[in-house]
Image 1 (cartoon, rainbow, N blue to C red):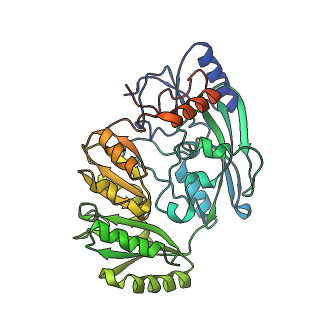
Image 2 (image 1 turned 30 degrees about the vertical axis):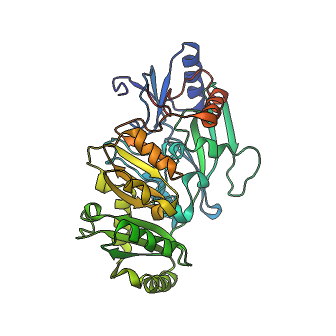
Length: 390
């Protein structure tokens, strides 16, 4: 485990971060970068000399509701940003998860942490990933150099798209100090259609039928019996859920049409308003597996084969993103899990109970090493975070 006794360094400006990295590089010290520290347990745990927290960098720099953009410092809390934009009838469309119970974490997720991990909730199938809403940033590289990319407008195509590189880098390339993201109007109405008792394969067929139609589904999940028993549903059998959002009239019409399309899959019920929102929070936070002691895997799979990954592995699984994301609690060896998922064209991340990202091999390993060397040649930032431990 990372040393909890190391007192965090809490810089209040980008210049202080530059100084901290320069000092660490000169003294051969290594820095662990955290925001709210909610994902601190994910990834390898090599010893560090300094813990640098961005929590004091929590200012909202600019919010332009008419331009659909929000600029904030990296330590700004996601909950605060969501309350701010909700007051203007807007939302963070990529639906960032918290995972605090899932990872037994304290603290609150921050904007920098969510973007650095590229975390997206159930609406990803409709709105895209976190990286697709990431417009620009300012940061400090592992060289101790300040740099920026992108901008504060939605339509920006100038220069290299470093946002895609930083999103998902888990703080191993740079410390983000200020980020600009896109926001979108919030839905006026929300309805979730529920189908009951479907086996995983049959549920997959129902989700694909919904996704292949013109229904504009914004959430598609399947909870087997063990997951569906939990609140707020407390269902007696498996539940397959399909969310529709938008204007009231549009949602009602699409819900009726989708109900007709799915009539052959059995009884269909509906959740509206707050009940629907409460359900999708449960899906987003993977509540059914929060207290499970087994290693927890996040399996990213082609939706057409999503159900096949967990079926080739003993354990309990639930599905999101219309089958493109499977959550699996399993005691199977990591090598087997990664092999099964890789053979299906997917990627496996162990969020709890093992090496998160696994070994890199071949051209990908070489590319990752070159990128790391370009931004952080001395290996100052989050050493080994995205590597398997020996």
